[in-house]
Image 1 (cartoon, rainbow, N blue to C red):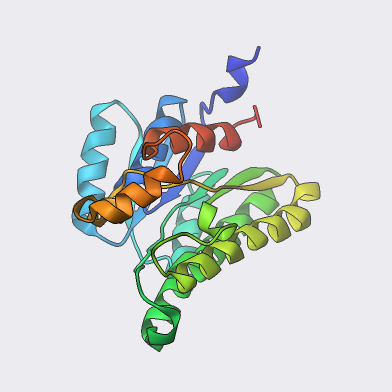
Image 2 (image 1 turned 90 degrees about the vertical axis):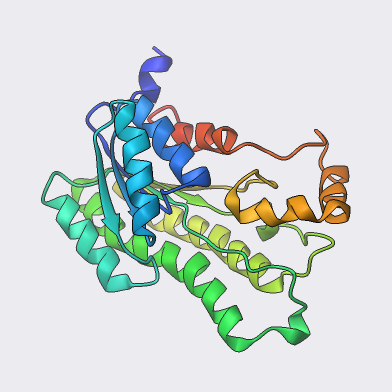
Length: 239
């Protein structure tokens, strides 16, 4: 009974930033549960590499090159997939950090870029795919937020990233409240420090890495598959 509720046979799951890290791990988890996969990624090389990895596991995968900050492109992909039955799962994973910049030295362009990808991108995708989910009367959206949406990380200064992720969590609550009665669930995960390309540079900064690990009860970085397992749960009828 319980494991049956984790199965996603016949569902179409969209993962943004699906070319690597948490996005690729999430696609892997959703595919293993039976979902058809649609990956959205800016980098065409990452897209093809991810497609090959997932297809080698026997998953049904389509890839769609696009930037989540391009609202029109996200709507076009959503409409294209709707013509093929429509996506019932959306994982808003695409994000950037550009950390270690004091607030007083922040360039306008850098602030706007992080907000555009991390917040606007989540909204554009949620709106585009949410429209079709609402018309179907069902769906699940999972946003990849961050612990940085609830705490101030130390020692790195990253006001722009923290603000963007805090906004993602409030957007998640707002959409959940609006759409729950119409059959669409909206949730978020708030990962700690995860071993992904986004955090790869810290490997060369031992003092910062030690600070991170000292503030982590398990004294280690998290793994992308650990986040993907939670995303699978929230995407499924088990949630």
